[in-house]
Image (tube, rainbow, N blue to C red):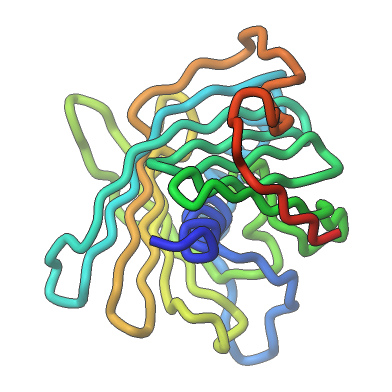
Length: 223
């Protein structure tokens, strides 16, 4: 899987590709009960100074057959983040982004776009949904003795490559534990969190690419 595709998938799964478009007239309104759940998710996340989580990413085709499975970790601290997934890593110190492909021994360096439409993992846990989706609260489901609230989101911008996103929010903690994205092509992407710790000490250098840790890697500066 190329560095471009894995970066796309990470962004796709963590952020569901927000565009900040206003809902046109005639499209209907979102479910206020679903908004209450999403607002609670956003409020809870804002209480975290830092967060570490383990996640899995499963890609399925239209027939439900698994095409690929990846495991990874994500760390966040303010606007900084670091994502590690099989063979690849992304570092962001709040200003620059390093996207590392270990097999190619190549890292692409770019500048973080701080505009309202920029992509950062933090947006999944805040109010990314307000202007980009219509959403409805579906019946609760249970996994491993825990109850999850299910929210189905439909993108307002119909040019998006996906037509539906389904979130599962753990009812007790108000944290999004899984995101399933349904592409128009028939592919489905499932991102699931398997463990999370919050408000733990994370050194700032964790969010900066270090050439010393990855000798022989070529840096491609795209700034």
